[in-house]
Length: 151
Image 1 (cartoon, rainbow, N blue to C red):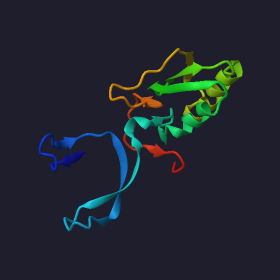
Image 2: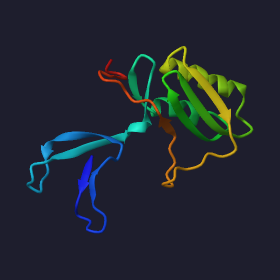
Image 3: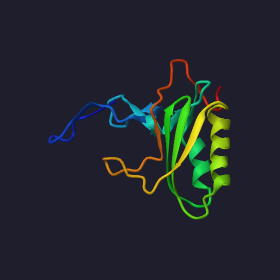
Image 4: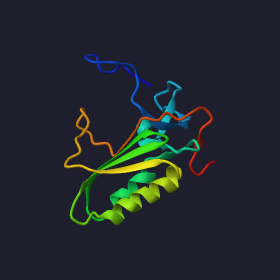
């Protein structure tokens, strides 16, 4: 959460940004003694949860879809740990083999029994904020999560 009172017109008091970050060891040079934000790793919904509880950054899935021929735009929506929907605005080079690769790669990362559905769509709208999100996860990590690479 962030509390920002420097703007008198619209202060943010305990505002939940959804960002995932890492606090540094050093304190702020302003003398307040507060920790400094060392790194922003992404939004909480940019992370996906595999069936075994492993939490990984959405980039683990994005790279598969982004690099396929014929993919003009896409959004990955993790509906549950058992189902993920991949919406693709497909050009002429996107074919059955591309769909099969998405399913194969996603199952390898999320779990062999996860239902991966690829849906061809005409357009993928931006969020109400105007921002575009490649990964939207409706799954919240459970307590005692395992991080990919640190399991």
